[in-house]
Figure 1 (cartoon, rainbow, N blue to C red):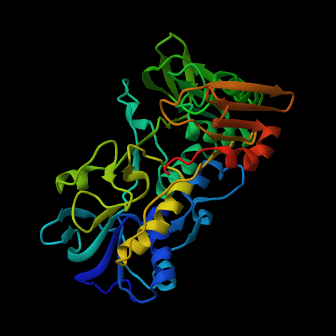
Figure 2 (cartoon, rainbow, N blue to C red):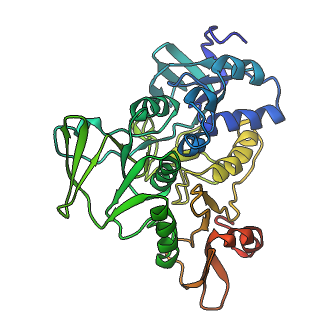
Length: 389
């Protein structure tokens, strides 16, 4: 269907063209080839793998090369109508319409796959507005322009994204400083001994860590950014990337009176509190869980598609280990559930770390595998309890 045709009503309307939006459409098409679907996105509507943004530099891929296909070819391939570069202004849950920057659209079923924004910490100093975040393909293209011909990059945040970008930049011979309030890298995912091993390998790759401190101010000093830390240290860099985490996009749902917590609250059928409105991906909260990773999106899309077509399917989550793309020391982690009782047991070898989180009765509840220990991923994943039964 021509992407410039403007449908005023559509059985299924999906807002957001990230991995969640496109995966749901693919799953619907496996079950129903003809039901009309309209995709509304404020992005140009490319299909690309967001997790690849933090490893594209070393693999020598430009922003253009990361986009596997543009909006037109996706629209043709999936037989959908796409309204790209279109903002959704409001949702009226009673009349089942959405107001967009290109007019009104009526839905029978609406899917919110709105994603999440990078959290921006309020920073002081005359260069606070020069701090950048990378959250989509356009951001990534800007980031690549900014670092071209430069040598020094500072990163705020030593979590998953911060560590992946740091490793990628170091592999491309940038000088990298990473600043985090936590006492270690991957504070929410790794036990201390495993974090130490990862930090050591990343430090050997040339990355300097500044833990237990935060940025007091960031100021422009000629060609350089001068970053003053709360502990009194001063770091100089040419580009400053913030990667302190994600916050689900909730404004649209809140304004429409849809229940939100940390994310847009959905049940195990992915239904929100509003009739015929569903949510999936980085914006959704399922039984208290917001899981901004690829595997949970794939699981949820397989359940959401039949539900949109009038069948009933219930979401379960198996154990879904997360791969941390740090070539200096490959890491796979499946953290124990929040509040799980047990302790970490460590086995550190020359070329890896196997950390098991075991319940008092010896059952495996979580793991962190680094280096050569990543080979055990399959065997250990089978022992883990499901995240949602």
